[in-house]
Length: 494
View 1: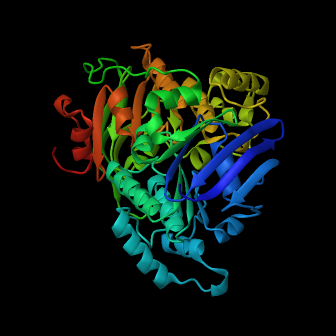
View 2: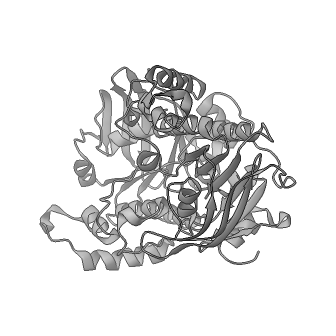
View 3: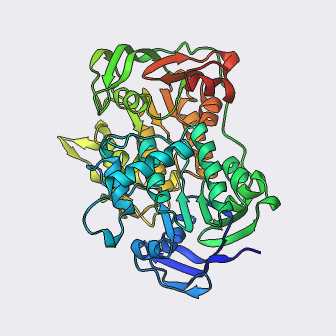
């Protein structure tokens, strides 16, 4: 049996009145890909943040290679060969990709001088080997979420850790990139490293992992070899019950509802000045879900922002309704004010509704009541509505955003990667809520679902479009398969 590189026993971590970990255990061995699963809020990110030196346990023990240690910082963890790729990006927005990679790989002995040329050569070679691609001279704040994810992965791999922790690394990667990353992880494990993978995509977990650990409500409830579990048993371990997907057959007859939004020959530029949308024309009708699939970086973000009224096109005609809800792809930077409490975050959308205003002032009692209703109905795990959004887990932050936006989406809902980073139960919940939103057809709004998750758009969409280099094209019914849509995403034919 291979060497135990890390062991966490009886880990307890509390945040005020909330117990994130309640005696969790984890054992990681050299030469294996170890998947860590659980619902949003189960404690996965907290447990791995303790192993990565970001947080300290209130009680319990951490051992590395048989010796008990206390990790006081990420630098301290790196000194022990532990690298953590975060779900929420730890990048300097105003620096370039190369500068961020160099900062991530800088050794104290190098002083203040960044080895840019050396890092550029190594990064270029690494990208060629694993199939990830990002422009080294691009500025981080101009990048899409997918590109930022690529930078985080590259930054960690360049330091060649013996224990590599990846928290939702494939959430916004394209299928070919996921395959390349999976092959890389298997290769790293064969070299004797330990890979800890947090993912809510059970098919990916089952394909790449050697061992699986499941957390539920802060405790370890399952830790077994991959060969002993399947998707159904993992789901039951995570949520305690089996789930039936909340989907409806795609490709229904075209909606005859009224047109609520339209684009005509819309052009817009991306952050670096390149063409992001190239002559897009589109009509959206009540009661239909229009799915948009594509490899990240082909204009999805710009399409979502223009549809939501958050960006103006360079040219073309746009007709948008007043009652628009927007679920952005990055909940932390575009969806929430993290230092606002739940009620204040609800007010960011509710202020547009006359029900919550009087003589130009907000009706805070009504807003707090809406926030409390949202907390209960959408199962946001928070003690009350006075807690700051920053203290919620990623999945609970997403539930807050979705619960806030659905009531204002009377005419149009724009959802950009709405289930990114969500567990299977939360994903099922979001899908059901979206279906319920349009279920009141013909009164229901139009929904635009822009997603890098092919299974999601295939399952939920009435009409399915593909976006390639800023141009939209409709997918014929006979081509609505993973293989068919995947080929169109890559600009080819199946």
